[in-house]
Image 1 (cartoon, helix red, strand yellow):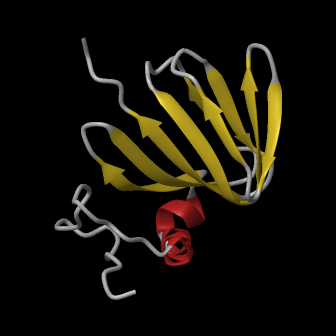
Image 2 (cartoon, helix red, strand yellow; image 1 turned 30 degrees about the vertical axis):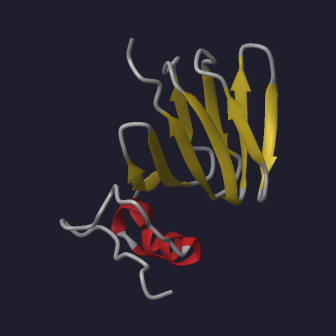
Length: 128
C-alpha cells in the first residue's frame, strides 16, 4: 500500500478525506514501543475528526479500562486476544474477530483477559 501513513510523527495526519492503515503493521509498531513493553497499555489514534475517533489500543493481560457515560456511541472490534466488557446488566466476552456496539449512555468496564489489541471507534454526537 503506497499511501500507508507512518506512526507517531508530528506531521502524521489524523483527519483527511482518505486515510489508509495496515493494521498488522500498526499493531506491530505499537508493540515495539517502550510504553507497551514496560506498561499496561499502548494506543495510537488513527482518526480524530469532528464526528469520529478511531483508536487502536493494546492492553496487557488483566489491564482494566473504565468507561463512563460518554454521550457518544462506540464500538469495540477485537483484533488480537480476548476481553470482557461489563455493563451494569451483562458481561460479554469478546475474542478475535468480535465486534460489540454500545449506546451513548452505557457505562462499562473493559478487562483484557490476555494480551489484547482492539479498535475503539467513537461516533461523536454533535452538541445541541
